Length: 447
Image (tube, rainbow, N blue to C red):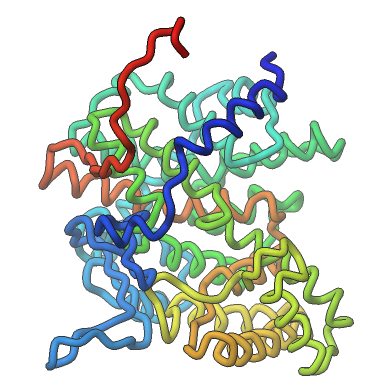
C-alpha cells in the first residue's frame, strides 16, 4: 500500500505544473467540456434518433428560448405518451420506434414484444454465480459487472455487425430489469440482513410490469402504478446523442469494441450525480427540505427560507444547487417534467399521497420564484424533480433509482450505437490544445 503522505507531497508539488486557469479557455478559443461559454452544448454529431429542443432561430438569425420539446424519430414524446392511452406497453412501442425508425403496426409490436419476452430468460446459474455470490454495495457497479459477465455467455460476443449489435442490444434490454432487481435483493439480503426472495420474469408482462412484479414480495401492482412506471421509462428512453452516457457509448463503440463494453461504459457515466444519479440527489435534498421547512404543512415563508439557504450553501451538500431545477438545453420548460407531474398527480390521488404531492408542487413554485429573483432569468423544473417522487410512490428503493434509469435509457444507447455504425466507421477522437511549456530534459544527477 502506498503511503498517502508521500502522495500528498508529490501532489502538492505537481500543482505548479498542472494548473490550467479557466480564463485560458477563452484566450485559446477552446471549448470546455463540449460547452459554449453560456453553458449550452456544442454540437458534435448528427442524428436522426432523437432531438432535444429548447431554442429556435428567429427570422433575424438570433436564438430565442422556447418551451422544451423532446422528439423520438421526429415524433413528439408527448404525443407518444398520450397515444398509448391505458396500455402498459408504451415503452416497448418507443423501443421499436427508436430502433427501427417508425411506429409499428399492432402485429409488428406484438411480434417485437414476443422477441423481448423470449429474451427475458437469464442464463442458468447466472444469478447465483454473478449476483447472489457477489453482492455489491452499489447497484450501478453490480450492473456493470453483470453486463460484462454476459459477454461470457455470448457465443460471438465481439461481433459488432449492425444486425448483431441490434440482437445483442435487445437481449440486454430484456434482461437488465431482472438483473437490477436481483442485484438489489442480493444487496439487502447480504448487507441489510433482510429476507431474500427471487421471482422469475412473467412472460406475459411488459417490462414495466415485470419490474414491479420482480421487486415486490407479493408481486402485486395496480393498473395506474404500471402506467406510471411505463410512462417514466418512455420519457427516459432517449435524450439525444449529446447526453453524457449516450455520447460515452458512441465514443467507446467507435473503437470497434463489443457492445458489452460500451454499455458498461455508459452505466459508469450514468452513475454520476450530475447525470443519472441526479434523481437520488433530489430525493435526499427533499428529505432535508421537509425537515427544515417543518413538515408538509409548511407555509410559503418557510419554503422560501429553505430554498434560499440551499442557494446560500447552508443546507444539504452545501453546493449551492437546488437539485431538480435547471437544464443545459431546456430553458423555459422540460417536457418530461411537465408530463410526469401530471402522471404523479393521478397516482398520488389513488395512493392517498396528495399531501406529499401538494408539498412538492408548492416548493417547486417557490424555488422557481427565488431562482428568478436571484439569477434574473427563468429556469425550468427538470425531470429529476418528479421522477424521484414517482419512484417513492411506487415503493421503489432509492438504490434502484439510477439502475431503473439505466434500464430505460439502454435502448437509446443501442439506437445511437447502431446509427453511428451505419454512417460513420471512424474512431471518435476529440482534440485538446497543449498549453504547457516545452522543457529541456535534466539528467537525474543534475536534478
